[in-house]
Image 1 (cartoon, rainbow, N blue to C red):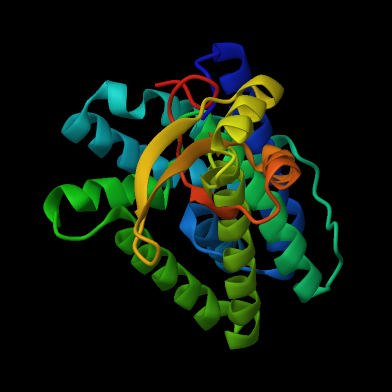
Image 2 (cartoon, rainbow, N blue to C red):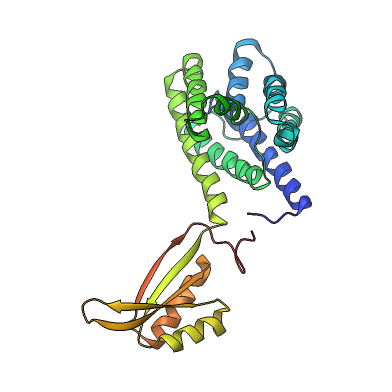
Length: 279
């Protein structure tokens, strides 16, 4: 997670909304691809009645934010309100253009990547772009047994179905590809900043390995008491957490002192503390 640097957070918000706006106006809309959300409704309404994307996005969000402010308070919506306004502004200011022509597969892939990066930046800034996210938060207040993710999936699914009824099933199937790509890219951006590697090392040369890790990598090492059940011998097991880039160095250190060492490496989804994510 980004540190609380307001300039950096608002920069991420501005860049993210611009990328999302570009994906909607210059990739999805020219090929009539409805990927869910208020933007998907805006594309449908533009096709049926010619209303500009930015205007529909703004109008549909007004009652959602009004209800959210009444039910959850201003503190809950203030930052998301700004990102929603920025998205509507980007949809208004961006020129009419198609980046991928009529190639729907390229639109699904490139649009998914672009909107995924944009949403990742917006989420890293501590907000969303409103729309179905805000509606899902309101619905969850009444349906407490369902998660936000489940509610959002149902809402976006209904919007995609509405798009299929207007533009046809084939384009809706391409939209599913775009949704999948966007979700994967967004998850990669969010989790990629948090993922670390945790390592368990069992070796008779535990002291040399621990010293090399602490001195050479600047990482802390914890010694755990262990017993080999086959040999019934007491052993020292080292535990340490490193970044993904450092895992190669860690392997080299272990192999240097003991090529027969038992090394277990797995993902650590979130690591808080010195040298990693601040609390």
